[in-house]
Amino acid sequence: MKRTTQFKQLLQSSELDFLLEAHNGVSAKIGEEAGFKALWAGGLCMSAQYGVRDSNEASWTQVLEMLEFMADATSIPILLDGDTGYGNFNNVRRLVHKLEQRNIAAVCIEDKMYPKTNSFINGEKQQLAEIDEFCSRIKAGKDAQKDDDFCIITRVEAFIAGWGLREAMKRAEAYHEAGSDGILIHSALRDPSEILAFKKEWADRSPVIIVPTKYYATPTDVFREAGFSMAIWANHMLRAAIVAYQETAVALMEHQTLVAIEDKVVPVKEIFRLQGASELQEAEERYLPKTGEQAKAIVLAASRGSALGDLTADKPKAMVDIQGQPLLSHIVSAYHGAGIKSISVVRGYLADKIDLQSISYVDNTDYADTGELVSLDKALQADADIKGNLFVSFGDVLFKRHILDQLAEPEEDFVVAVDTNWQESGNRGRAADYVSCSEPYSRQVFNHRVLLTDSNESMDEAAINGEWTGLIRVSKPALPGFRAKVAALAAQPDMRKAKLHHLLAALAADGESIRVVYTTGHWLDIDSLEDLVAAGSFS
Image (cartoon, rainbow, N blue to C red; front, side):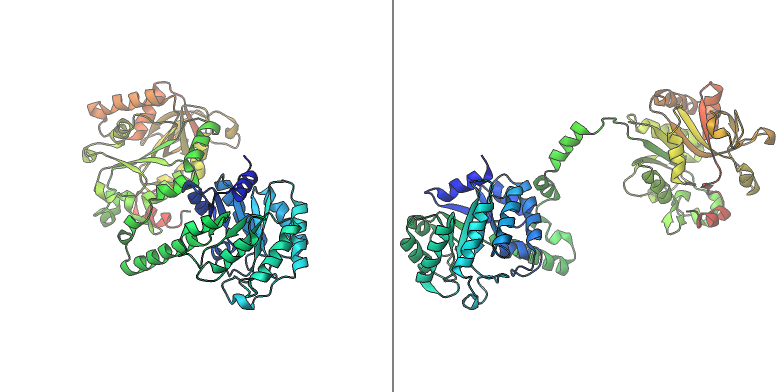
Protein backbone atom coordinates (compact mmCIF):
# COMPACT_ATOMS: atom_id res chain seq x y z
CA MET A 1 0.00 0.00 0.00
CA LYS A 2 1.26 3.48 -0.84
CA ARG A 3 2.37 5.55 2.13
CA THR A 4 -0.09 8.25 1.16
CA THR A 5 -2.90 5.69 1.28
CA GLN A 6 -1.67 4.34 4.62
CA PHE A 7 -1.74 7.84 6.10
CA LYS A 8 -5.16 8.71 4.70
CA GLN A 9 -6.64 5.56 6.17
CA LEU A 10 -5.12 6.37 9.58
CA LEU A 11 -6.44 9.93 9.32
CA GLN A 12 -9.97 8.82 8.49
CA SER A 13 -10.08 5.88 10.90
CA SER A 14 -12.49 5.94 13.83
CA GLU A 15 -9.65 4.82 16.08
CA LEU A 16 -7.19 7.22 17.73
CA ASP A 17 -3.72 6.79 16.23
CA PHE A 18 -0.40 8.20 17.38
CA LEU A 19 2.42 9.81 15.45
CA LEU A 20 5.93 9.90 16.85
CA GLU A 21 8.30 12.78 16.19
CA ALA A 22 11.40 11.94 14.17
CA HIS A 23 14.04 14.34 12.93
CA ASN A 24 16.55 12.20 11.03
CA GLY A 25 16.97 8.77 9.50
CA VAL A 26 17.93 6.89 12.66
CA SER A 27 15.16 8.38 14.83
CA ALA A 28 12.66 7.58 12.06
CA LYS A 29 13.83 3.97 11.89
CA ILE A 30 13.64 3.63 15.67
CA GLY A 31 10.08 4.98 15.61
CA GLU A 32 9.01 2.44 13.02
CA GLU A 33 10.68 -0.41 14.91
CA ALA A 34 8.83 0.67 18.07
CA GLY A 35 5.55 0.00 16.24
CA PHE A 36 4.34 3.46 15.25
CA LYS A 37 2.24 3.48 12.10
CA ALA A 38 3.27 7.00 11.06
CA LEU A 39 5.82 9.68 11.91
CA TRP A 40 5.76 13.43 12.49
CA ALA A 41 8.69 15.36 11.05
CA GLY A 42 8.37 18.30 13.42
CA GLY A 43 9.68 21.73 12.54
CA LEU A 44 11.04 22.38 16.03
CA CYS A 45 13.10 19.19 16.04
CA MET A 46 14.12 19.34 12.39
CA SER A 47 15.56 22.82 12.95
CA ALA A 48 17.06 21.90 16.34
CA GLN A 49 19.02 18.99 14.89
CA TYR A 50 20.65 21.58 12.62
CA GLY A 51 21.33 23.73 15.69
CA VAL A 52 19.13 26.64 14.54
CA ARG A 53 15.88 28.24 15.74
CA ASP A 54 12.38 27.13 14.77
CA SER A 55 11.93 30.32 12.74
CA ASN A 56 12.55 29.03 9.21
CA GLU A 57 16.30 29.41 9.77
CA ALA A 58 16.77 25.95 8.26
CA SER A 59 15.82 26.28 4.60
CA TRP A 60 13.03 24.20 3.17
CA THR A 61 15.53 22.47 0.86
CA GLN A 62 17.54 21.40 3.93
CA VAL A 63 14.35 20.01 5.43
CA LEU A 64 13.64 18.15 2.18
CA GLU A 65 17.10 16.63 2.20
CA MET A 66 16.62 15.25 5.71
CA LEU A 67 13.13 14.01 4.83
CA GLU A 68 14.59 12.00 1.98
CA PHE A 69 16.90 10.17 4.39
CA MET A 70 13.98 9.57 6.76
CA ALA A 71 11.79 8.16 3.99
CA ASP A 72 14.61 5.93 2.75
CA ALA A 73 15.13 4.55 6.26
CA THR A 74 11.48 3.61 6.81
CA SER A 75 8.39 2.14 5.17
CA ILE A 76 5.69 4.03 7.11
CA PRO A 77 4.10 7.38 6.19
CA ILE A 78 5.61 10.67 7.28
CA LEU A 79 3.62 13.84 8.00
CA LEU A 80 5.82 16.89 7.56
CA ASP A 81 5.41 19.92 9.77
CA GLY A 82 5.63 22.28 6.83
CA ASP A 83 5.42 25.46 8.93
CA THR A 84 3.59 28.08 6.86
CA GLY A 85 4.33 26.34 3.57
CA TYR A 86 7.54 28.37 3.28
CA GLY A 87 5.85 31.29 1.54
CA ASN A 88 2.74 31.94 -0.53
CA PHE A 89 0.61 29.69 -2.71
CA ASN A 90 3.42 29.21 -5.24
CA ASN A 91 5.84 27.96 -2.57
CA VAL A 92 3.19 25.53 -1.28
CA ARG A 93 2.49 23.93 -4.62
CA ARG A 94 6.20 23.50 -5.29
CA LEU A 95 6.60 22.04 -1.80
CA VAL A 96 3.85 19.50 -2.46
CA HIS A 97 5.50 18.50 -5.71
CA LYS A 98 8.85 17.96 -3.99
CA LEU A 99 7.31 16.02 -1.10
CA GLU A 100 5.56 13.62 -3.46
CA GLN A 101 8.88 13.04 -5.23
CA ARG A 102 10.37 11.99 -1.90
CA ASN A 103 7.54 9.64 -0.93
CA ILE A 104 6.27 11.86 1.91
CA ALA A 105 2.63 11.09 2.68
CA ALA A 106 1.30 14.43 3.93
CA VAL A 107 2.14 17.98 4.95
CA CYS A 108 0.75 20.20 7.67
CA ILE A 109 0.77 23.97 7.11
CA GLU A 110 -0.12 26.57 9.75
CA ASP A 111 -2.04 29.81 9.28
CA LYS A 112 0.71 32.22 10.26
CA MET A 113 2.98 34.60 8.41
CA TYR A 114 6.33 33.62 6.90
CA PRO A 115 8.84 33.37 8.50
CA LYS A 116 7.07 31.70 11.40
CA THR A 117 7.93 31.63 15.10
CA ASN A 118 7.40 28.58 17.29
CA SER A 119 3.90 28.60 18.76
CA PHE A 120 5.15 28.37 22.34
CA ILE A 121 7.27 31.56 22.08
CA ASN A 122 5.09 34.64 22.74
CA GLY A 123 2.18 32.99 20.97
CA GLU A 124 -0.32 35.80 21.65
CA LYS A 125 1.96 38.30 19.85
CA GLN A 126 2.17 36.22 16.70
CA GLN A 127 0.40 37.46 13.59
CA LEU A 128 -1.99 35.12 11.80
CA ALA A 129 -2.36 34.99 8.04
CA GLU A 130 -5.39 36.49 6.30
CA ILE A 131 -7.94 33.73 5.85
CA ASP A 132 -8.35 34.18 2.10
CA GLU A 133 -4.61 34.27 1.53
CA PHE A 134 -4.08 31.09 3.57
CA CYS A 135 -6.89 29.39 1.67
CA SER A 136 -5.00 30.16 -1.54
CA ARG A 137 -2.10 28.11 -0.16
CA ILE A 138 -4.42 25.17 0.52
CA LYS A 139 -6.08 25.32 -2.91
CA ALA A 140 -2.75 25.61 -4.71
CA GLY A 141 -1.34 22.65 -2.78
CA LYS A 142 -4.36 20.46 -3.54
CA ASP A 143 -4.24 21.40 -7.22
CA ALA A 144 -0.52 20.61 -7.35
CA GLN A 145 -0.69 17.09 -5.91
CA LYS A 146 -0.57 14.23 -8.37
CA ASP A 147 -1.47 11.51 -5.85
CA ASP A 148 -5.13 11.73 -4.83
CA ASP A 149 -4.27 10.29 -1.41
CA PHE A 150 -1.65 12.92 -0.55
CA CYS A 151 -3.02 14.89 2.40
CA ILE A 152 -2.75 18.54 3.34
CA ILE A 153 -3.46 19.16 7.02
CA THR A 154 -4.17 22.73 8.10
CA ARG A 155 -3.06 23.86 11.52
CA VAL A 156 -5.30 26.42 13.19
CA GLU A 157 -3.34 28.81 15.45
CA ALA A 158 -6.27 30.90 16.70
CA PHE A 159 -5.98 29.59 20.27
CA ILE A 160 -2.22 30.18 20.26
CA ALA A 161 -2.71 33.81 19.18
CA GLY A 162 -5.44 34.34 21.80
CA TRP A 163 -8.34 34.78 19.37
CA GLY A 164 -10.62 32.14 20.92
CA LEU A 165 -13.02 29.48 19.75
CA ARG A 166 -15.08 31.60 17.40
CA GLU A 167 -12.05 32.56 15.32
CA ALA A 168 -10.79 28.98 15.39
CA MET A 169 -14.09 27.71 14.02
CA LYS A 170 -14.22 30.44 11.37
CA ARG A 171 -10.79 29.57 10.11
CA ALA A 172 -11.32 25.81 10.23
CA GLU A 173 -14.54 26.17 8.19
CA ALA A 174 -12.73 28.21 5.54
CA TYR A 175 -9.83 25.79 5.35
CA HIS A 176 -12.17 22.81 5.11
CA GLU A 177 -14.00 24.50 2.26
CA ALA A 178 -10.68 25.21 0.50
CA GLY A 179 -9.87 21.49 0.45
CA SER A 180 -8.04 20.73 3.70
CA ASP A 181 -7.94 16.99 4.47
CA GLY A 182 -7.87 17.52 8.22
CA ILE A 183 -7.53 20.13 10.95
CA LEU A 184 -4.71 20.27 13.48
CA ILE A 185 -6.03 22.33 16.38
CA HIS A 186 -3.24 23.72 18.53
CA SER A 187 -3.29 24.99 22.11
CA ALA A 188 -0.73 26.19 24.62
CA LEU A 189 -2.90 25.63 27.69
CA ARG A 190 -1.98 23.14 30.41
CA ASP A 191 -5.43 21.58 30.13
CA PRO A 192 -7.35 20.36 27.08
CA SER A 193 -10.33 22.68 27.47
CA GLU A 194 -9.75 24.60 24.24
CA ILE A 195 -9.20 21.61 22.01
CA LEU A 196 -12.14 19.74 23.54
CA ALA A 197 -14.40 22.76 22.99
CA PHE A 198 -13.28 22.95 19.37
CA LYS A 199 -13.84 19.23 18.77
CA LYS A 200 -17.33 19.38 20.24
CA GLU A 201 -18.25 22.32 18.03
CA TRP A 202 -16.53 20.90 14.96
CA ALA A 203 -18.05 17.43 15.39
CA ASP A 204 -17.02 15.14 12.52
CA ARG A 205 -16.86 17.50 9.59
CA SER A 206 -13.25 16.36 8.99
CA PRO A 207 -10.57 14.58 11.00
CA VAL A 208 -9.00 16.53 13.86
CA ILE A 209 -5.39 16.13 15.02
CA ILE A 210 -3.98 17.29 18.34
CA VAL A 211 -0.51 17.89 19.82
CA PRO A 212 -0.72 17.29 23.62
CA THR A 213 2.71 18.78 24.41
CA LYS A 214 1.38 21.25 26.97
CA TYR A 215 -1.61 19.27 28.28
CA TYR A 216 0.37 16.03 28.52
CA ALA A 217 -1.22 15.03 31.85
CA THR A 218 -4.61 14.53 30.20
CA PRO A 219 -5.55 10.83 30.12
CA THR A 220 -5.43 9.45 26.60
CA ASP A 221 -8.94 8.05 26.93
CA VAL A 222 -10.22 11.63 27.02
CA PHE A 223 -8.91 12.09 23.48
CA ARG A 224 -10.40 8.78 22.36
CA GLU A 225 -13.82 9.60 23.77
CA ALA A 226 -13.75 13.01 22.10
CA GLY A 227 -13.20 11.35 18.71
CA PHE A 228 -9.85 12.85 17.75
CA SER A 229 -8.19 11.23 14.75
CA MET A 230 -4.53 11.50 15.71
CA ALA A 231 -2.34 12.61 18.60
CA ILE A 232 1.22 13.68 17.86
CA TRP A 233 4.06 13.14 20.33
CA ALA A 234 5.72 16.14 18.76
CA ASN A 235 9.21 16.62 20.22
CA HIS A 236 9.90 13.88 22.73
CA MET A 237 12.47 11.87 20.80
CA LEU A 238 14.73 14.90 20.53
CA ARG A 239 14.10 15.99 24.12
CA ALA A 240 15.00 12.52 25.38
CA ALA A 241 18.12 12.47 23.22
CA ILE A 242 19.26 15.84 24.56
CA VAL A 243 19.12 14.52 28.13
CA ALA A 244 21.30 11.57 27.08
CA TYR A 245 23.68 13.85 25.18
CA GLN A 246 24.12 16.19 28.14
CA GLU A 247 24.55 13.45 30.75
CA THR A 248 27.07 11.61 28.57
CA ALA A 249 29.09 14.74 27.83
CA VAL A 250 29.22 15.72 31.52
CA ALA A 251 30.21 12.20 32.58
CA LEU A 252 33.00 11.99 30.02
CA MET A 253 34.32 15.43 30.95
CA GLU A 254 34.20 14.66 34.66
CA HIS A 255 35.56 11.10 34.71
CA GLN A 256 37.78 11.22 31.59
CA THR A 257 37.15 7.56 30.92
CA LEU A 258 34.68 5.63 28.79
CA VAL A 259 34.10 3.21 31.65
CA ALA A 260 31.77 5.78 33.22
CA ILE A 261 29.26 5.59 30.38
CA GLU A 262 29.91 2.37 28.44
CA ASP A 263 27.16 0.38 30.17
CA LYS A 264 24.66 3.20 29.53
CA VAL A 265 25.06 3.42 25.76
CA VAL A 266 24.29 0.99 22.97
CA PRO A 267 27.17 -0.99 21.47
CA VAL A 268 28.51 0.23 18.14
CA LYS A 269 27.04 -2.85 16.46
CA GLU A 270 23.55 -1.50 17.23
CA ILE A 271 24.40 1.58 15.16
CA PHE A 272 25.56 -0.72 12.36
CA ARG A 273 22.25 -2.61 12.61
CA LEU A 274 20.19 0.56 12.36
CA GLN A 275 22.29 1.68 9.41
CA GLY A 276 21.65 -1.61 7.61
CA ALA A 277 25.32 -2.60 7.46
CA SER A 278 24.44 -6.30 7.07
CA GLU A 279 22.49 -5.58 3.89
CA LEU A 280 25.56 -3.93 2.38
CA GLN A 281 27.67 -6.96 3.26
CA GLU A 282 25.13 -9.21 1.55
CA ALA A 283 25.12 -6.93 -1.48
CA GLU A 284 28.91 -7.04 -1.65
CA GLU A 285 28.70 -10.83 -1.77
CA ARG A 286 26.24 -10.60 -4.68
CA TYR A 287 27.86 -7.89 -6.75
CA LEU A 288 31.59 -7.57 -6.05
CA PRO A 289 34.07 -9.84 -7.87
CA LYS A 290 34.72 -12.96 -5.82
CA THR A 291 38.45 -13.20 -6.39
CA GLY A 292 39.22 -14.15 -2.79
CA GLU A 293 42.85 -13.32 -3.55
CA GLN A 294 44.06 -11.03 -0.80
CA ALA A 295 47.79 -10.52 -1.12
CA LYS A 296 49.97 -11.36 1.87
CA ALA A 297 53.27 -9.87 3.01
CA ILE A 298 55.92 -11.48 5.22
CA VAL A 299 58.52 -9.19 6.76
CA LEU A 300 61.63 -10.87 8.18
CA ALA A 301 62.73 -8.85 11.22
CA ALA A 302 64.31 -11.34 13.62
CA SER A 303 67.83 -9.93 13.73
CA ARG A 304 69.27 -7.39 16.12
CA GLY A 305 71.29 -5.31 13.68
CA SER A 306 74.42 -5.21 15.81
CA ALA A 307 76.19 -2.92 13.33
CA LEU A 308 74.04 -0.09 14.69
CA GLY A 309 75.72 -0.47 18.08
CA ASP A 310 73.93 1.00 21.09
CA LEU A 311 70.88 1.91 19.00
CA THR A 312 69.86 -1.75 19.04
CA ALA A 313 70.92 -2.53 22.58
CA ASP A 314 67.34 -2.35 23.81
CA LYS A 315 65.36 -2.76 20.59
CA PRO A 316 65.58 -4.68 17.30
CA LYS A 317 66.78 -2.89 14.20
CA ALA A 318 63.22 -2.90 12.81
CA MET A 319 62.15 -0.59 15.66
CA VAL A 320 64.93 1.99 15.27
CA ASP A 321 63.47 5.47 14.89
CA ILE A 322 63.34 7.03 11.43
CA GLN A 323 61.59 10.36 10.95
CA GLY A 324 59.72 9.91 14.21
CA GLN A 325 58.46 6.38 13.50
CA PRO A 326 59.94 2.88 13.76
CA LEU A 327 61.60 1.58 10.63
CA LEU A 328 59.00 -1.19 10.51
CA SER A 329 56.16 1.37 10.42
CA HIS A 330 57.53 2.79 7.17
CA ILE A 331 57.63 -0.70 5.66
CA VAL A 332 54.07 -1.45 6.75
CA SER A 333 52.91 1.90 5.31
CA ALA A 334 54.43 1.03 1.93
CA TYR A 335 52.52 -2.27 1.89
CA HIS A 336 49.31 -0.56 2.94
CA GLY A 337 49.79 2.00 0.19
CA ALA A 338 49.84 -0.85 -2.33
CA GLY A 339 46.62 -2.28 -0.87
CA ILE A 340 48.34 -5.12 1.00
CA LYS A 341 46.75 -5.23 4.45
CA SER A 342 47.60 -8.76 5.58
CA ILE A 343 51.11 -8.55 7.00
CA SER A 344 53.06 -10.99 9.17
CA VAL A 345 56.31 -10.00 10.86
CA VAL A 346 58.84 -12.58 12.00
CA ARG A 347 60.36 -11.47 15.30
CA GLY A 348 63.42 -12.79 17.13
CA TYR A 349 65.72 -10.48 19.08
CA LEU A 350 63.75 -8.68 21.84
CA ALA A 351 60.54 -9.90 20.22
CA ASP A 352 58.23 -8.12 22.65
CA LYS A 353 59.66 -4.76 21.53
CA ILE A 354 58.02 -5.17 18.12
CA ASP A 355 54.39 -4.43 18.93
CA LEU A 356 52.81 -2.45 16.09
CA GLN A 357 49.05 -2.78 15.76
CA SER A 358 47.05 -4.38 12.93
CA ILE A 359 49.72 -6.88 11.92
CA SER A 360 50.35 -10.48 12.99
CA TYR A 361 53.53 -11.93 14.43
CA VAL A 362 55.51 -15.14 14.20
CA ASP A 363 58.42 -15.62 16.59
CA ASN A 364 61.68 -17.31 15.61
CA THR A 365 62.99 -18.23 19.05
CA ASP A 366 66.06 -19.75 17.38
CA TYR A 367 66.97 -16.46 15.69
CA ALA A 368 70.50 -16.44 17.18
CA ASP A 369 71.38 -19.76 15.55
CA THR A 370 69.37 -19.51 12.33
CA GLY A 371 69.07 -17.25 9.31
CA GLU A 372 66.48 -15.67 7.08
CA LEU A 373 65.46 -18.95 5.45
CA VAL A 374 64.35 -20.50 8.76
CA SER A 375 62.42 -17.35 9.66
CA LEU A 376 60.60 -17.53 6.33
CA ASP A 377 59.83 -21.21 6.88
CA LYS A 378 58.31 -20.47 10.30
CA ALA A 379 56.14 -17.70 8.80
CA LEU A 380 54.89 -19.99 6.02
CA GLN A 381 54.07 -22.73 8.51
CA ALA A 382 52.11 -20.26 10.64
CA ASP A 383 49.87 -19.24 7.72
CA ALA A 384 48.78 -22.28 5.76
CA ASP A 385 45.93 -20.47 3.95
CA ILE A 386 47.37 -17.53 2.05
CA LYS A 387 44.62 -16.34 -0.30
CA GLY A 388 46.64 -14.55 -2.96
CA ASN A 389 50.12 -13.55 -4.02
CA LEU A 390 52.88 -13.52 -1.40
CA PHE A 391 55.36 -10.68 -0.97
CA VAL A 392 58.50 -11.17 1.13
CA SER A 393 60.86 -8.44 2.32
CA PHE A 394 63.28 -7.65 5.12
CA GLY A 395 62.59 -5.68 8.27
CA ASP A 396 65.53 -3.35 7.60
CA VAL A 397 64.81 -2.41 3.98
CA LEU A 398 62.89 0.75 3.06
CA PHE A 399 61.30 0.83 -0.40
CA LYS A 400 58.93 2.92 -2.44
CA ARG A 401 55.42 1.62 -2.96
CA HIS A 402 55.74 1.59 -6.75
CA ILE A 403 58.27 -1.26 -6.53
CA LEU A 404 55.47 -3.46 -5.14
CA ASP A 405 53.32 -2.45 -8.12
CA GLN A 406 56.15 -3.44 -10.48
CA LEU A 407 56.47 -6.83 -8.78
CA ALA A 408 52.75 -7.48 -9.20
CA GLU A 409 52.63 -6.86 -12.96
CA PRO A 410 54.54 -9.80 -14.56
CA GLU A 411 52.77 -13.14 -14.91
CA GLU A 412 55.73 -15.26 -13.73
CA ASP A 413 55.44 -17.24 -10.50
CA PHE A 414 58.54 -15.59 -9.04
CA VAL A 415 59.43 -11.91 -9.46
CA VAL A 416 62.28 -10.01 -7.79
CA ALA A 417 63.27 -6.35 -7.76
CA VAL A 418 66.93 -5.75 -8.73
CA ASP A 419 68.73 -2.42 -8.36
CA THR A 420 70.91 -1.50 -11.33
CA ASN A 421 72.91 0.95 -9.21
CA TRP A 422 74.74 -1.86 -7.41
CA GLN A 423 78.13 -0.12 -7.39
CA GLU A 424 76.81 2.44 -4.89
CA SER A 425 75.99 -0.36 -2.46
CA GLY A 426 79.50 -1.72 -2.80
CA ASN A 427 80.96 1.70 -2.18
CA ARG A 428 79.26 1.80 1.22
CA GLY A 429 81.44 -1.15 2.18
CA ARG A 430 78.80 -3.68 3.09
CA ALA A 431 77.79 -7.11 1.92
CA ALA A 432 75.17 -7.21 -0.81
CA ASP A 433 72.94 -9.80 -2.47
CA TYR A 434 74.36 -9.58 -5.98
CA VAL A 435 72.58 -11.20 -8.89
CA SER A 436 73.33 -12.32 -12.41
CA CYS A 437 70.55 -11.98 -14.95
CA SER A 438 69.82 -13.25 -18.42
CA GLU A 439 70.21 -9.71 -19.75
CA PRO A 440 71.82 -6.61 -18.22
CA TYR A 441 69.90 -3.42 -17.69
CA SER A 442 69.45 -1.17 -20.73
CA ARG A 443 66.85 1.19 -22.13
CA GLN A 444 65.40 -1.66 -24.17
CA VAL A 445 65.20 -4.13 -21.29
CA PHE A 446 61.69 -3.08 -20.28
CA ASN A 447 60.38 -4.78 -23.38
CA HIS A 448 62.28 -8.00 -22.63
CA ARG A 449 61.71 -10.90 -20.28
CA VAL A 450 64.76 -10.80 -17.98
CA LEU A 451 65.36 -13.76 -15.66
CA LEU A 452 67.59 -14.20 -12.62
CA THR A 453 70.29 -16.81 -13.15
CA ASP A 454 72.24 -16.66 -9.89
CA SER A 455 72.41 -14.82 -6.55
CA ASN A 456 75.31 -14.58 -4.14
CA GLU A 457 77.13 -12.22 -1.81
CA SER A 458 80.43 -13.15 -3.43
CA MET A 459 80.29 -12.84 -7.20
CA ASP A 460 82.78 -11.88 -9.88
CA GLU A 461 82.20 -8.25 -10.74
CA ALA A 462 81.89 -9.03 -14.43
CA ALA A 463 78.95 -11.32 -13.69
CA ILE A 464 77.04 -8.80 -11.56
CA ASN A 465 73.97 -7.23 -13.16
CA GLY A 466 72.54 -5.68 -10.02
CA GLU A 467 71.76 -5.99 -6.35
CA TRP A 468 68.66 -7.78 -5.14
CA THR A 469 66.60 -5.41 -3.02
CA GLY A 470 65.27 -8.17 -0.77
CA LEU A 471 61.80 -7.99 -2.35
CA ILE A 472 60.27 -11.05 -3.93
CA ARG A 473 56.74 -11.82 -5.10
CA VAL A 474 55.47 -15.41 -5.30
CA SER A 475 52.25 -16.13 -7.19
CA LYS A 476 49.40 -17.99 -5.52
CA PRO A 477 49.70 -21.05 -7.86
CA ALA A 478 53.41 -21.34 -7.05
CA LEU A 479 52.94 -21.17 -3.27
CA PRO A 480 52.64 -24.95 -2.59
CA GLY A 481 55.92 -25.68 -4.38
CA PHE A 482 57.54 -22.63 -2.79
CA ARG A 483 56.51 -23.80 0.68
CA ALA A 484 57.90 -27.24 0.03
CA LYS A 485 61.20 -25.87 -1.26
CA VAL A 486 61.64 -23.54 1.72
CA ALA A 487 60.80 -26.32 4.18
CA ALA A 488 63.17 -28.78 2.52
CA LEU A 489 66.07 -26.33 2.53
CA ALA A 490 65.41 -25.14 6.10
CA ALA A 491 65.48 -28.74 7.29
CA GLN A 492 69.03 -29.26 6.05
CA PRO A 493 71.56 -28.80 8.88
CA ASP A 494 73.96 -26.86 6.66
CA MET A 495 71.19 -24.44 5.66
CA ARG A 496 70.07 -23.40 9.15
CA LYS A 497 71.85 -20.07 8.78
CA ALA A 498 71.07 -19.66 5.10
CA LYS A 499 69.95 -16.31 3.75
CA LEU A 500 67.25 -15.68 1.18
CA HIS A 501 69.73 -15.23 -1.65
CA HIS A 502 70.57 -18.92 -1.12
CA LEU A 503 66.89 -19.68 -1.73
CA LEU A 504 66.91 -17.62 -4.94
CA ALA A 505 70.00 -19.43 -6.15
CA ALA A 506 68.40 -22.81 -5.37
CA LEU A 507 65.20 -21.90 -7.22
CA ALA A 508 67.19 -20.75 -10.25
CA ALA A 509 69.28 -23.95 -10.14
CA ASP A 510 66.05 -25.96 -10.14
CA GLY A 511 65.06 -24.27 -13.39
CA GLU A 512 62.42 -21.97 -11.94
CA SER A 513 61.85 -18.80 -13.94
CA ILE A 514 62.54 -15.86 -11.64
CA ARG A 515 61.49 -12.70 -13.44
CA VAL A 516 63.58 -9.58 -12.80
CA VAL A 517 62.16 -6.06 -12.67
CA TYR A 518 64.93 -3.47 -12.70
CA THR A 519 64.88 -0.39 -10.53
CA THR A 520 67.44 2.36 -10.04
CA GLY A 521 67.41 3.28 -6.37
CA HIS A 522 64.08 3.90 -4.62
CA TRP A 523 65.03 1.55 -1.79
CA LEU A 524 67.44 1.62 1.14
CA ASP A 525 69.01 -1.21 3.14
CA ILE A 526 69.65 -0.04 6.72
CA ASP A 527 72.95 -1.72 7.62
CA SER A 528 74.96 1.07 9.22
CA LEU A 529 74.77 4.42 10.95
CA GLU A 530 75.45 6.02 7.58
CA ASP A 531 72.38 4.23 6.19
CA LEU A 532 70.36 5.44 9.13
CA VAL A 533 71.31 9.03 8.38
CA ALA A 534 70.37 8.52 4.73
CA ALA A 535 67.00 7.10 5.82
CA GLY A 536 66.15 10.46 7.38
CA SER A 537 65.71 11.92 3.90
CA PHE A 538 64.16 8.83 2.28
CA SER A 539 60.66 9.74 1.13
